[in-house]
Amino acid sequence: MTDQLPPLGADEVLDIVDEHDRVVGQAPRGAVYADGLLHRCVFVQARDARGRIFVHRRTDRKLVFPSRYDMFVGGVVGAGESYDEAALREAEEELGVSGLPAPTPLFRFLYRGPGGGWWSAVYEVRCDLPVSPQEEEVAWWDFLPEEEVAARLGEWDWVPDGLEAYARLRERRTGAGPSGG
Image 1 (cartoon, rainbow, N blue to C red):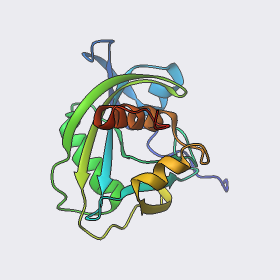
Image 2: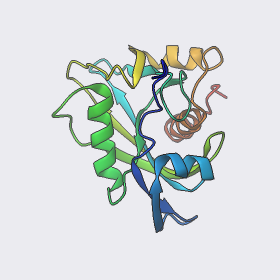
Image 3: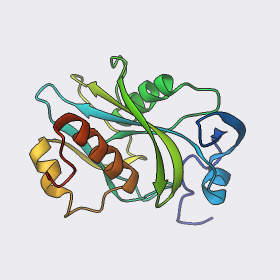
């Protein structure tokens, strides 16, 4: 028996997609990442009643980007699951709530960078419920004002796909990139 636990979700089956986000097959999540296959993910920006963003640090057991900070909750879209279904499921799972309103879809983009490539659907949701994030997924969390998130961009080790989604979202909302320019 080993002291180290296996990465989370390596056996979960995902749809493999092409450059146009059309399903072309299925494979276990571990193989998808190992072989660099395109798949689908959701990013949900959760805000509390005061408009603060839920920010968390991933556990060291995460298959991709362990121990890094993220300003989105979310994850992979399971085989046969819609983006909308995955967004609600992932948001409720990671925030540790039930009865969350359906997240609002904002846009999609094809992420290509560290960790591989995946179609990314970005959502937002307001969470007025008391959160209780999953300990196996979330090592630390807090709701932070937008200004503090922006100030931490150059200080904390963020997940690169979340940074790209955040920059695209911020640009759509303000016309500015992640550094405010």
